[in-house]
Structure formats: structure tokens, C-alpha cells
Image 1 (cartoon, rainbow, N blue to C red):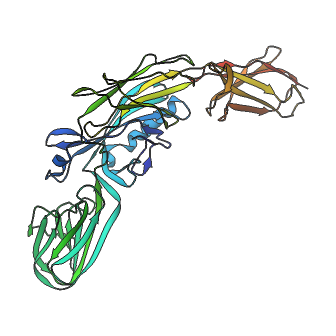
Image 2 (cartoon, rainbow, N blue to C red; image 1 turned 180 degrees about the horizontal axis):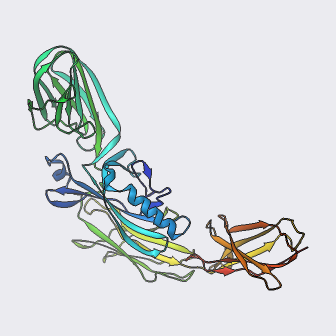
Image 3 (cartoon, one colour; image 1 turned 90 degrees about the vertical axis):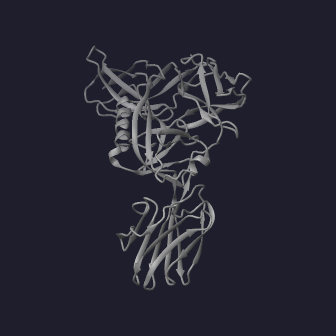
Length: 477
């Protein structure tokens, strides 16, 4: 996935609390051909020509949990919540990728494992696999209802998907009938036939998909009636327009329900490729230039195709450079790391008609900064019971501009301490959190006359270093 990096499972948006997770690379789609897993994209012909109904599909995703408050306890809580959501015991649930918002898989969690926890105490990467029974369903159900007044009756249907859909055909008898009921599709030439007795008002269902019951069954008034079925090539609804041909009673109602099916995740049908990304220095000093090298290869050797190097900040993708690789399949990119933070970089090859797309593993760059605390008081002499306010700002040193700048990350903890100037016990910490501009404040009053000394500390967070302010003396009278 390339934009908002989100999936929804069982109605839960995993980018939101308590999960706090996002996808980091495109999902990978696999299907089981006999006993061999084949990665999608693959040959469309070999996939569609298979006669098996229940394809064993596996969808693999890489997820990153980032605790919004940068606390390991929050990250572990999110991990447990996600593990419970993906528990296979929950059964099949709707799985929706925001890249394909109008379609869904019926999927069940299969694998949930940690792939990387070395980036930060509050960041963890996971590998999650889902098992499902085939390509994606449209979120919109298509329904065609036709009055049968002659036989054969021709009904035109239209599918907007790119793969055959498996419908439910329901006939409600308008007359007594003894004989064969046949349904055929003009494009696929698939046909199914049932022979039996119908009374007025009887309901005959031909079910082909799990959305409507046990697939490839016939029900008469809700009871199994498959013993006289002649198949087995049941009539799917193909992409585009086609005609359903109904033969049987001269009077009744024919209802056709289906969901369009989609081969989502399809990018190309080409030769598999691999793009790799490396960096010469993963922990630069602020303002230092580092050198990324991306290399694109296939079974035919290096590829001189376009590669994009990009990174994420606060879940937003930023494309750094898109350029053609040289004859060795390499692209070099040398940015100056002017902003503190933990950055995950990727290289991506979008694919061509000949070569399939690919995305590299993440390369993490950790960029640290020195910090300081400004600290002021609204007054330095107050009376007992009088309120006053301390305020300040958390700042970082920009080595490029040679200036102190506000830390624009909310919820950084600021610790207030104080003691009586005569040598009393240090009280604290009293904790307040910064706003998005690095500002903080404390408000209080005093009940005992004395001289007090106040100061604040920032413990550091792995990106910004620890800091302590100057002391402020308060005279309480």
C-alpha cells in the first residue's frame, strides 16, 4: 500500500487506538496451486482457468506499531490488542485495504509474529498473514429481479469486476411444475440443471458462494435438494455484460444476487524483481549528509529502471527522489539529515509490462538533537494562598540554522522539582506535557511562608536529549 497505509479488519481501523498500527509496504498476495504457493501477480490465465472453487489465498502484510505517547507500555498494549483482533478463533471477518476501498476479503488471521523490535523501545514491526477463500468481494451487492412470463427467459446482467462472480439464483414458482429447471450463461457456456416438482410459491435456490450458504448446493424451500442436480460447471457471472438463460416454468420470479469479484493487488504480470536499499550511516549527527544506495535486480540481472526512494513522517509518505538506475541497477541519494527523529526509508520499483513491481525492506535512520528548557515564573514574590504560573518551552538545537527551535512534538513529559532554599527535601517530579509547539506550564499556590527554589527537567526520549532548566527562586510571604 502506498498512501495512508491502512487496513480495516472486522470493522476495526487498525491505525486508531488501541492498535496504533500502520502498513509499511504493499500487501503480498499468494494463492495455493495444488501444494505450491505462487506469489501474486502471476499468470492470469493459469489462475482463472483453474477449476477449483475454494482457492486457498494468503495475504501477507508488514505492520508497524508506534506508541503515540512514545511509551513502551503503550506499544505492548497495542501489540496485545492487535493479536486479539487477528486471533484465528474469531473466524472469517471482512478485510478491507484502503487502496481498494470498495472491495473486501473474507479472511481469517493465520500468522502474527514480531519481525523487528530493534528500532526503538516504543516501535515494533510485525508480520501478519491472513487466509481467505479467494479474490476480493465488492462491498456493493448486485441484484437482478425478473418476472418470468415465458421460457426460455433471457436476463441481461452486468458485472463491473475483473473476475467471474459466484451468484445465488433464486426462482419463486408462479405455477405448479414437474420437470427440469435449467440456468445457463451465454458467455461462459456454463450450465446447471435441477429436476423435480414445484408447487406455487416454492422457492428454489442455486447457491454458488459462501455469502449465501454452502457453495454449490440447491435448496428447495430451505431444504437440501441436490440429488437431482446435473452440473458440475455452474454458471458464473463473468466480467462485463452477459445473458442468463432460464428454462423451466412459464410463470414465476427469477432473482439473481452476486458481488463482483476483483483481483486486487494486481500490478503487472512480469518477471519477479527485487529492490534493495542500504545506507552508509544509520545514526548521523544533525545536519550530516548520508548516502543511500538502492539496487534493482531480476533473474536477468541488474535493471536500469526508475526507482523511487521515500520515507514516512507521522504516517505521511514523502517521495525523496525518483530517478532511473544506472547500468548496474543502482540509484544513489545523499540527503542532509536536518530534522531530528526516527525515519524509515524505502526503495520502490513500480513495475513495467516486462517486470513485476517490488519494494525494499525498511532502512531506519536515527537522527538525534540536543535540547534545552526555557523556564520563567509569572512572579518571584507571592503571598500565601496566591496563585502563580510557571511556563516554558522545550527546544532543540538546529545545527543547520544555528538556532534553538521549538520541539513540535506534543506530549513530551516535563518534570517540575522544588525545595526550600534553606536546604529542604527536594519535592517532585510534578509532571506536565508539552503541547504541539513544545510549550508547557504549571500553576500553584503556597501555604507556608518560605523561600523556594524551582527548576524543570526533560528526561529525553531517544530523539531529543535530556535537559534541565536554570533555577528560579520564589519568595512566599
